[in-house]
Image (cartoon, rainbow, N blue to C red; front, side, top):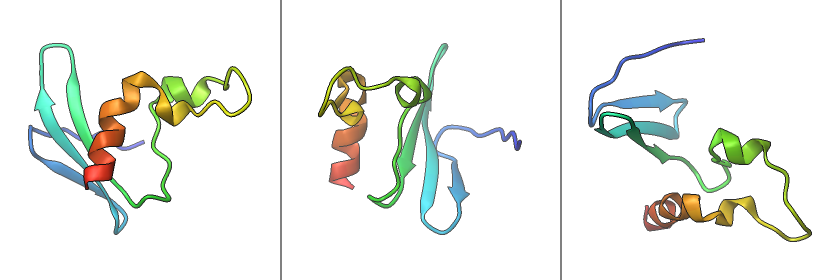
Length: 75
C-alpha cells in the first residue's frame, strides 16, 4: 500500500491515463476528481459492495453519484 499526502489542486497519476486531483479539503471531507477513460469503471466502495436490488438496476445511476456522472460526461 502507498500512502501519499496531497494539498488542494495537487494530482496523483495512475498509469498513463488515470489522474486523481484533490479538488478541495474541508473539515470532514476531501473532494477528489477522477479523470479516466470511459471503459474504466469508477465506483465508491459502498456501491461496489452493494448488489443490485432487481433486474436492470444500474448502480452507476445512484443519486449520490449524479455529480460524478455529470463531471465525467463533461470531460
